[in-house]
Amino acid sequence: MSPTLTDATPLAADPNDGLNVLESRGSTAETFGIPLAVLAELTHRCPLQCPYCSNPVELERASGELSTEEWKKVLSELAEIGVLQIHFSGGEPTARKDLVELVRHATEVGLYTNLITSAVLLTKDKLAALADAGLCHVQISFQGSEADIADRVAGFRNAHAQKIKAAGWARELDLPLTVNAVMHRQNLHQLPDIIQMAVDLDADRLEVANVQYYGWALKNRAALMPTLEQIEETSHIVEDAQVRLKGILTIDYVVPDYYALRPKKCMGGWGRQFFNISPTGKILPCHAAETITGLDFESVRSNHSIAWIWQNSDAFNRYRGTGWMPEPCRSCEFKEVDFGGCRCQAFALTGDAGNTDPACTLSPMHEQIFKTAETEASGDVNRFIYRNFNGGTPEADAQHDA
Ligand code: SF4
Ligand code: FES
Image 1 (cartoon, helix red, strand yellow):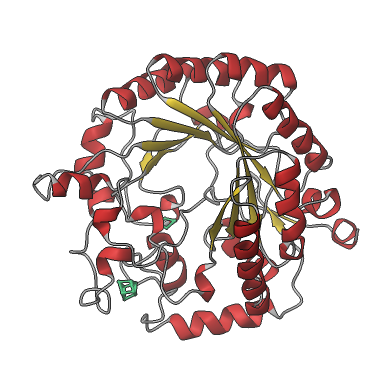
Image 2 (cartoon, helix red, strand yellow):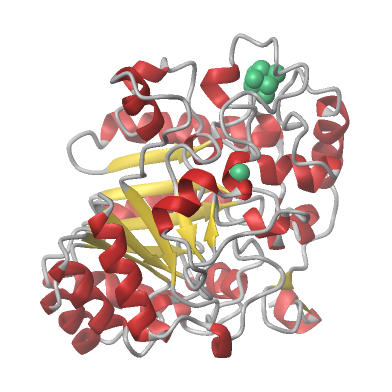
């Protein structure tokens, strides 16, 4: 998921901003710090079919995935260049038969490991083996607070019950647990119950993330877009719970772009704090970067090192910093606060990733997309297009009526 919307936080206050840290030490502008955390998308295979999946619409097939040895080499290289945390994600990372081996290798080279999972393929033994291999943290995604809606959103029967079981195993094994809840028009009414569910599951953290609209979510925007009233209510519910549950549950909240005044500082700024590695080894500035056409992404299978790709490749430098910005960003006081918002959203909504993110009220397109959001939110499109390797499958009538 994309990072939480941040307000006008001064850069100097952000210890995760590798570039800022280097700059404050007097580094040259061309020298970029390596991120502390990297997302490894081990596979795009997944038994779930969530209609807002952040994977590209063109999913990568198993035949192209990095091998076990290739991933191990990548993990070693990441540790060597100073990365501290690895988030194993997908698709569904537990679909990889070598996950335990990869976690063990990551542990051996000194990386903190986090598993981001739908949990439906986990068994207690598998989770115990992962813990034994050094797994440090588990994040389980939930699609709702009860099975009817959750299983329908996931497009997978019994998913919810399985997730509840897996969360219990994680706590039995003493693994810190984060509950990820992706929210949209069709499940926002369950938010109070989801918060209580996270408390009951003894989670340390709950991430309440509103859907971000590119890729699969853009295909499903009319079925997912919340109303302004829902968003206002959500903010109150989250704020109340954050106070009430202080010391019991940490709640992070990602505001939906379409209803914000300014865009989120997506990925902490393009090429500043984050990269991810696709199943076939492409180094990407964000999980949705491949939705932008016209960018070539270098691979770990190339002759270049990961550090070289981060510092020198065109895909990272194209929108890095502020030099690429058009107006109104170029002369805006917030340009080093949000870095012009999200490149993927700018591309999805304007056809040019070099435009100001239309989530910004200063974008000439903001008014238009806000109206579209309002229209879609009050419309009657509720049926999903499920994410899968066939390019998406429309939800069946019976399933939707259930
Ligand atoms: Fe951010 Fe650009 Fe909007 Fe200014 S104009 S707030 S820099 S997106
Ligand atoms: Fe925001 Fe790609 S998802 S830059």
